[in-house]
Amino acid sequence: GQQLNQSPQSMFIQEGEDVSMNCTSSSIFNTWLWYKQDPGEGPVLLIALYKAGELTSNGRLTAQFGITRKDSFLNISASIPSDVGIYFCAGRNSGGSNYKLTFGKGTLLTVNP
Amino acid sequence: DAGVTQSPTHLIKTRGQHVTLRCSPISGHKSVSWYQQVLGQGPQFIFQYYEKEERGRGNFPDRFSARQFPNYSSELNVNALLLGDSALYLCASSSGGGFLGAGNQPQHFGDGTRLSIL
Image: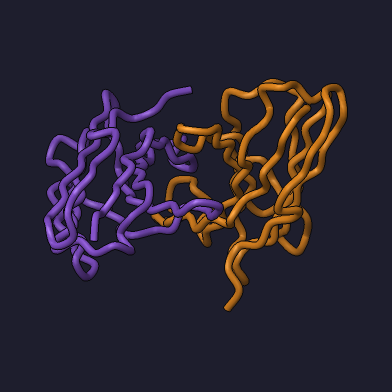
């Protein structure tokens, strides 16, 4: 099935560093979502973006909806050990098929205390 | 408030068997979607149901079926299990129906059912 291009695939950083990850698509989306998944759990919604160019923050997390509607990025500032996990981007299509989410393959984040 | 709940949490089956997975959405949510997540990949869309009607289907064979009940809970059924069906099956609920005009309501996921096929 279709998956978005998410990069980097994995990151290993020191506590306190900032992190940036992004997601691109060949298709236009009218909604971008960012989720975090911990081992043995389901994805947890971090940020939802509904408008091209929108920049939204949630604590130390900031995400932007690309102006072309084909990309999005997520920044995490001042990382802490509990930020460890897999981060997924997801897009929802425009038009009549706007019920399903298309996911990236995920970015595995490791934070060294 | 309770989130999306799924049962069972883990299940082991053998090839050729049938399995039923269950999902209870967040209270007040009328839409339920099912996703399959194999190891190392993002979730893949299987079905969406809204108000007990199928609203969308992903690229999965007819061995996969689902339904939604009057209380908005849902079941995912898989027949003639194959080794490749081993995965984490996730259920997500949202308040919107996902069709035009229903609004962009984000989907909230349960912790999934880990299905292993031997």
